Length: 307
Image 1 (cartoon, rainbow, N blue to C red):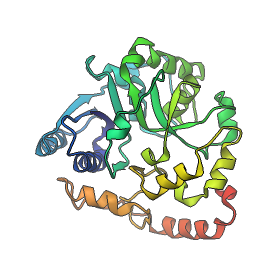
Image 2 (cartoon, rainbow, N blue to C red):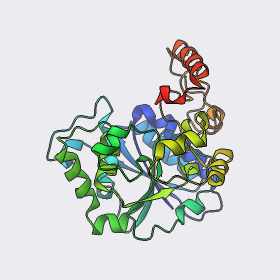
Image 3 (cartoon, rainbow, N blue to C red):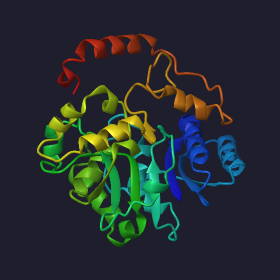
Image 4 (tube, rainbow, N blue to C red):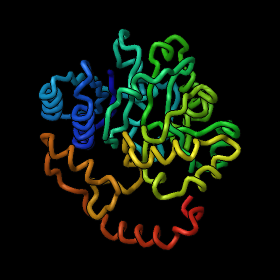
């Protein structure tokens, strides 16, 4: 199994916790190779990551991104996000040709169970698989040509890299991004959705599980998806009961002081097994989370207010 992360030096502890969670919950898998596209990770952290992988008998291969502008023939605006977020659009340039399939995971994910079923997903004629993000703004969907199609979150992507290369999917995504003047609301995620309409295989929410799935009811999310078909109720409930990949999407992240994320302890559990155990929390969030909790309580009967 090949797993890809992109990261800078600031996000090393989070990715280390993610790697740990994969290793701890997939010990039965014979081969797992972690590929990291790095933006200026320190040599000390590189060595720690590689040695940590070896402690599980897993390879950690680090590829330096360099100047990302060299891969784009147009100017782009990442609207405040670090440009490392665009690296997944050019992932084929950093992985060996013999790698024909890869599971991309955002650095803010934690794995809680086996990835074998996900890894063995039959992608059929699809170039990649992802999980639906049902709360995306309707206008944004329409602007991307997704009136009758789901919008997908790109935090977890199972990629048929062989097909990606053969069909020059990376070029198609960049062409779409360029056509939109390098200015998209969600940058690479919008570019993936807009360029691959109808070509993305739908994964169950348990493989990219974030807070909306326990903050909003199934009925409400299904209504938001209309006219696109959503999951059956039983499928959805089973995912909520036992999510496999937690994605700490949004502001409520477990390394921020004062957060009450439902799966905060999962992150701490795996971080404490890494060389970054006891990493300091981000300060300055306490008041924000107090206000956030009050807001969620008051608006619970009126979920559309939060969309």
